[in-house]
Image: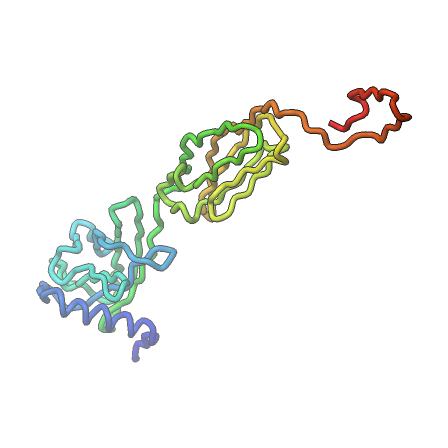
Length: 262
């Protein structure tokens, strides 16, 4: 009876066998038989290096690694491929044996897989690494407050200068704010602009700037407070109008402050 191998698996087997032939000398003790496939993360990228151990169930004392004859891991057009040459085990394999593979990226990501050996030229076993790396909180450093005299403008703040995150780039940090009442806050392209309600306004407000990372599962945030103050300025009085007063000729006219709009 013919054993049918799906086209996709045939292609994977062909690629892994070709890579294997190009980069690894074929040295094995038993019948040549390859097991291999792609190694990827959930985002479809591949680790630059891996280590793996492989053994046949029931013979866990016989171990093959990425350094064993006929075994390897290579990057081919951006995709990682591993190869286990089952013929390198001291004891020859038979159809029906189950090969177990444990693979690690050295960064906390691990994956295991098993495949039943057949009389076909080889088996494909693709592996997807579950990363053990967890999201860390962004760190917002001290954002300086500003104090200026009435009628002046606050300097803009480049928020990229005040955040760091192990997993998220500055460009992907989401910034929000809270705490303002009279002051207006605008954040565009991670640059904060704070404006007063008018040239004659004075007072002080504390604004909280909040940075949130882009982790899709567990987004984390950190924040920092900055105080923005406007000091009052003693402006000279300005007369903007007055009431109309009349008097007869040669009669003095007395003006009072109430007659003016100041």
